[in-house]
Length: 140
Length: 326
Image 1 (cartoon, rainbow over the protein chains, first blue to last red):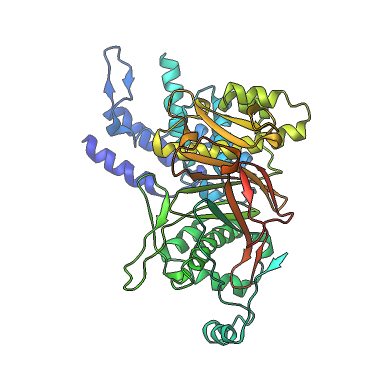
Image 2: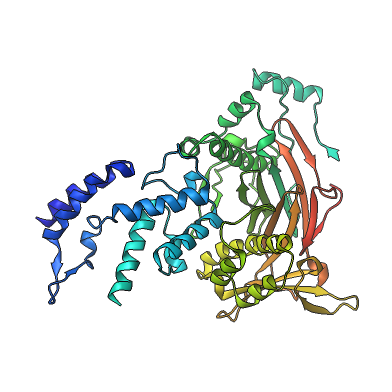
């Protein structure tokens, strides 16, 4: 059953949608509550990598990342910026990417290892990493 | 300023036959291969390329894969930059094959470290030269470095580049203690910013190198400069302007990166800093005479090439010496 959900979520997240359409992701994230593991304490465990696709970042997180990226790259208000937008396609070079990561660290109060920051190439990847780090921080 | 625009009678005939609509284009001028200790740099200034039929001519040189990547870029300016970068690589490399391999026919692949390299075909009566290249761009300048037999790396950065964050906050987060101290000691904000960009240009490159060997976070290596005193002794210096040699020390790696690589820094076209890095063939003691030699051309492929070494367009900062004549 979980596999079926995972497949349908995969299709949903591969559609290019702008930030305004994030209700779609919201719906799939309620699906994940059913298929998540529960630890002894009764708190949900997000560790299983099988469910990574379901655990899309919150819309507010994605929006904040978009704002930081827009500011760093000085994008015009009309230029398209979706969660799947690649930084390099938007004209970001290595210095921009490092500055974006620094901006994210300040905004979310997290610390991003340089190894992880190398894997951030889109808004979505940044948002997912942030949520992971914020979660880890609150668990600590 | 030495202009290499050659338009002999024969080449006129060839260009008329081959190029049709763009009347004033010339064929690519072939260039002799770099010698052992030479690095060649070719650069193009995107804002000076406006002619749409010329750009269309360049578009024909790209592979379908490169064209797709180019059209994925967001906006005209970025697409043009992508087009010119690929055009620069293809036309530059073609020159070093005596134009026997046309710009369009080059194939590329990524090596084990993800670095693009030439994939040569099979040729009956010709051995391809062991060319290495690397391209770097900013919105206002694209540069391609070429060497023979040794790996080369180029990184360019606008001198006027402003970062969004405070320079010292950025440095404290990402640079080593020595580098932070060096920046902190500079009182003039404009000079501090320029020194930051010089350091960044070098560090970003070394980091890219490091990825191939042992992904080194920024803080684990330091860039130091050495100056050669009048008595020949080499002493440490904090001033990039005085430095004759750039050293890279990795804290946790006993075999420092400087052992295998030589670094140089220069100012290009009065507008950019360029860091160059070339593999050393053996572990030299780093005496002042062993600098990389540099030859620099400014180009508008099929229109004009200009050898700019020895002019104001090329100012060595450290670690390099110029070939003043071709």
